[in-house]
Image (cartoon, rainbow, N blue to C red):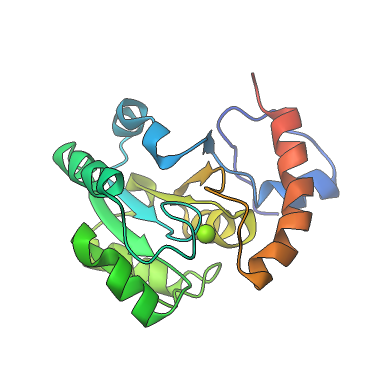
Length: 185
Ligand SMILES: [Mg+2]
């Protein structure tokens, strides 16, 4: 069975644990403003692929705020290639990413990896040099693992979610409970 060691997580035997591990993040941060930039650089990460909804903005906020625009500028100055990869609509993604001046992919079909791989190709990035940043374990984290990226989970920005996401959050809690139980303090 496919296995991946996660940073800072105690490995555990048993099929239940092994299935859950597909959805574990490699790194957990409270928000995108707490990304461990130096550690990522040291690990060889050169590209960051961001989810939009509830990762960098609430799903019902149409445009990025000043802080986020500055964060993207900062990350670019640090040498990262950036990309937006969202399952949301073309209109939503276009408008949101306009001021971020970055490659933006809509209807990404996460956890499917096709659009992610296309984006990496465009950015000339290898999976092992790229991290995906998102708020959901069943879309963002699973997608990242399947494509061989480093997976960074953020706490959701707010508790407002689209209906489909609301349903997933319940099951997500079980995964995260196990993750935090096994994470090294
Ligand atoms: Mg999201």
